[in-house]
Length: 344
Ligand code: FAD
Image (spheres, rainbow, N blue to C red):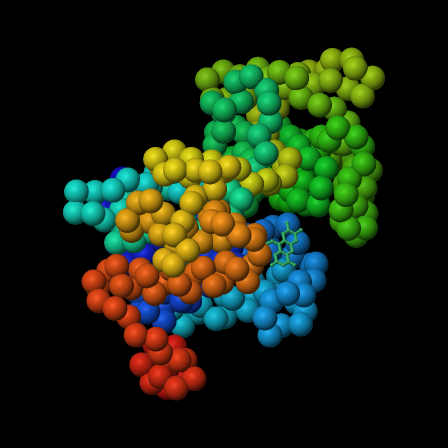
């Protein structure tokens, strides 16, 4: 493992509230690293409703989830947070000097003077397939929602793409470029939810025999160590079938799971972190919680509430780190803040 990175504040969760948190910390002159399990910014706005309208963001009568994320990205840009995307934070421990050490699933370690948990309703992770023995193959011959097929050892292999949505159909088509021995697209029904143009491409690959489409569900796997050899599946009429497979790409959707936050020794009430409403600190000095993940009397899971929480948390963190009261300044008139924003 390489030496830990260092920062003032680690923000866990790059949803709308985590992104605004980075902005507010920047106004306090604090540097942050922003970490998310998803490979992109925006949390629920980006993952669950990118094209749906939001009507209750102050000053923006209407914008889509994706537009809000784009605006927040622009707003935090002057403070250039270091992004660690596609990385779930798994461990959070306090060091002897009071700083916090975070470890991610991909091996990044980060030392921070304070931590803001903006983990929403949990980290967005791919839905797992329930087949005995699959966990030992992940990263070797089973890949959940792989972002870049070119990095997988697909050449000359029998590739199974498993899923029924646009990502699965696209992956089956993209897999052809990696010179595999064969590509099978498997879904429980022979119906795919993808744009017409993509379905037309699939049909033409299917007609040419380049992609085999199979309606089936997985039952059991056969493997030698971490090398997958075959998958036993059940066909729609219930009959069993054995499919030779060496690389299994799973696209069963992404859903939020509270995950490691529950393992950090912090008190949880109904899967949420209780906080003080003046500072948004949790029971652990130096650890703050904002947005959907926190709990206090009157809490409403709304973006605007998370923005307020992030603002007060930033003031509180600045006071905690300097041990001095922080004076209120306006972005309209403070040359100090305008310098930080790079607009002076
Ligand atoms: P999230 O958006 O949930 O982001 C949290 C992020 O933390 C996620 O990306 C997750 O992957 C990451 N994370 C969690 N744990 C870890 C970990 N251990 N390591 C790494 N990353 C982690 N609100 C409104 O105000 N107005 C609306 O109109 C509105 N419409 C909505 C419509 C729908 C369909 C839904 C589902 C919600 C809507 N909401 C709306 C609610 C709003 O989306 C949430 O309040 C908001 O997203 C909360 O932001 P957040 O940053 O706290 O959490």
